[in-house]
View 1 (cartoon, rainbow over the protein chains, first blue to last red):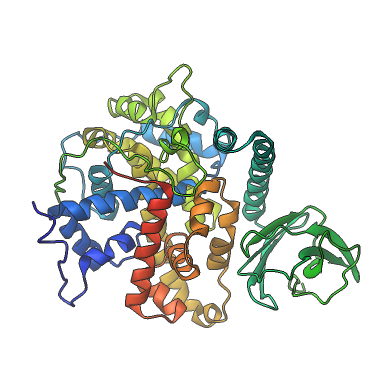
View 2 (view 1 turned 180 degrees about the vertical axis):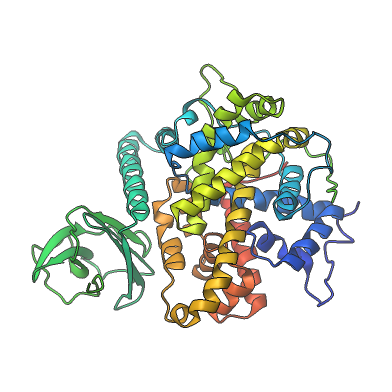
Length: 274
Length: 223
């Protein structure tokens, strides 16, 4: 089974099937392409190898979104499996279908020796904690101690923030508003009754000695939410001061921030009027 | 369909992380967000799934506890609806139970398998829902009201795994957009191309280059 003579396999429309492996790994192909890729992978070791890696990569994108499921689901699932007969071990006899097709590819091609989840994982919600701890420990090993402390604190903040964002997005009452940012970039706010997430991407770097500052707009007043750390043009801030009906705005202020806005906002996010 | 693979040692291991600020202890758990700490060495999920394959419902309960947050999170990120996500999570977990024996025989990673299945099922559902919605509400959709994409695009920062975030940030903006629309948005690359008014080949390249770059950044390697 040589990889070399098949890696360049072309589909009937001249498409290089190999180039579709990544899209396949993201489930971003149609049914015909799906089967075409599966045929390629079945005979091409190099393609299978690549798919295995990209499948594992895609799975990480999903794992990164780990969220505790509704507690009641556990009982539902365990009740369901108690009534569900299991398939035999012999490969190739378990039913066909899209799900099964996906499974076959993954199961056979993604092989690794990872220790699998257990222990602390038994409690949903522990995932984040554990990862954060692990990440912190590594950071501590990798950088000087003073920085390690900062890193640890940051990791805790990141963890808390991630949970806050998760909560926000899970809130059925939250709304999403979006706007372009003057000077470049896009801002998106997720607004709930009692907090808001402000994110922006592609922001221009503020001039020397300037920083972005976030404000909650309420009744004609601007309440400072502090300067916004700009990570390569990307920001994300949770505002706990936000209340239903408030707006969000960002201005460019002297380093350290201002008590009141001193410039015109580069972006204003307002919830839709009820 | 039979997949023929070379003799693949059971390893998806990390390459030396490139600029990810990670060292090997965590990198070996690249697919094992829930890896147990070394103390006590509780059974791994793969082992538990093998027990489940023999009808051990208690073991499967532990599999559920280990994998359901990632499965549910994957579904939720695509479906943007907790009820739908819960339904698909249940389907996936029952499928995991039903075919556990085969899974064990193939010696893959329970986690990657579960998440692959979860994403596939979630995408199938979102596409069936969207095709109907597209017929009904095409005009509305074209107004740019796409909470799906907006949220998916912006909440990478909400990821509880900074590593993934870091690596997503390492993509070019166009790669980033294409990968996110495809994976979290549940779109085909053709739909992504339509959405971005970009040529098909271009979008395909962005997805491919972006995912390969993510793979390298995340240190995913199948030995």
